[in-house]
Image 1: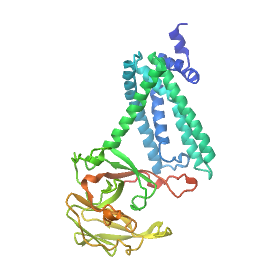
Image 2: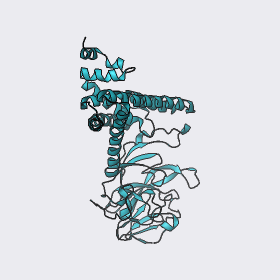
Image 3: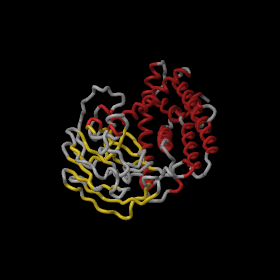
Image 4: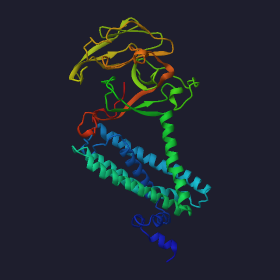
Length: 415
């Protein structure tokens, strides 16, 4: 039996566990391209699921529920990203390996990446299962330690496999295989993720209740970075002299925006109510824009939240309709008698915006100047993007420190 015939008769699934180098050569010899692509898709989908901030309760899903759509989107995204990523990363790894003296073909590199990632897939599954199981128990620390340790071992196992397979395909040593893999498998995905984060969508979370009920503590949402173009605060480590805003589009009244605080540089989220040149005032809890009182309508039942002293209350809730804008929901914890429910008239400067929180009595916004810790008027250059969708939500009050998903909020558009 020739060497080629011996490789063709080797079952890669059996050889995989103890002889990864032989397994990858068997995959190449048997031309298992479809199996390689399927592995890449599955690995990416599972990794996306495990990378979520909190675990999905996959075994409690109800047909037709919003979470089914999220899981389906993750599966589709994993399939596309896994296959496309395999080709892109495989090409980069092969180019780098050739520069280091490698002699492998792109198909062999793709096989090494996909099949060498099987322990990484096991690591993701173990990690996800551990977090799902821990969420069902009051004291999950032991299971978390055991599961986390097992996931870590599988991860290191996968790294060793990847190095062994790349070295076998490229016919060089472990050091050059490690360098090739790091540049291609880590550097390229990191660069792509950073590009998407900077130019397209950036994830944020709601750390407080100042935008309730629109955004609640435990909500994770995407912000469109291209909604208003790109300025200095769109890019990390941008120099202070970078004052140009390219592809600029002005915010609209009613937009929920992320902006950089003019004084301390932290990220804040509020709703735009006043445009440049507008006058804004609060009088008896009612919002006045350019001297006209904004229409609002009482909504029952009210919103369950915490009062000023942390006590549970049902806050008066209203649908507020801005002039020329859409309708959004607000709450008045102090029932129109809060300390910020009566203000002077604010004149919004040119190229700046007046912002409010939807939780009117629990929000430091443009009613509070920068000298008192608020943002004051928000310059256009400080606006980073527009909040567009809640992609995940958890209940921060759930027991055992492991927040359970709030399925009804996942996938909601932010309006």
